[in-house]
Image 1 (spheres, helix red, strand yellow):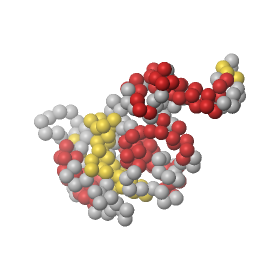
Image 2: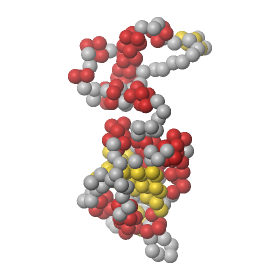
Image 3: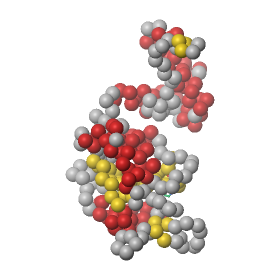
Image 4: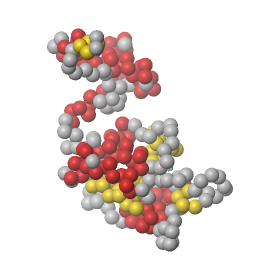
Length: 250
Ligand SMILES: OB(O)c1ccc2cc[nH]c2c1
């Protein structure tokens, strides 16, 4: 997978050189290219922002540098690019809330381009223009506001890259995590390791009993119970076709 990140704060993306994501780059599973938006300014101060039409607090990012920067990225496609071009991911408080389903969808793409806004955001015409040329997804990490898109890109990149074959050593673990489609998107059940008793707290006996069917039932029940109490919105999305009577009894 090729990832292009356009930003004025390239150093924010340094964590992508670490750990599993850094190793994935070294293995050729990921090709991350961080591009400086200011390379696409032409004034002495390398200006990327200006005051908003209609007034209001703060500054907005000008469309011209973004147009030049994104055009340069699109002019340099990877060999395996989709005929539709990349998905342009624009972190934004007004975007769709990022979910594991979106991570799975983006992990299927050969090429992602991230546009990291700063200040009060990017002139609206940039997204409007590029929607006519590529698939655009405005994405929010949740109902809170960051100072820019870079932190969101780190989170999205980690969630997506870990799904790529070869990035996570034990790929089977991906299917057992919270929000995994294989477990209907439920929250993960409680997990325990040795010792069997710790500060007066014992591991549930069923988990040490050796009855695998009972363990699976307990884990499903606990996942349903946790999801029902903490994320009823997730439970509401559960496909009844994939539930048996015991699920519904929880
Ligand atoms: O919270 B966010 O997802 C987010 C994303 C981009 C920008 C640009 C300026 N503030 C931002 C906030």
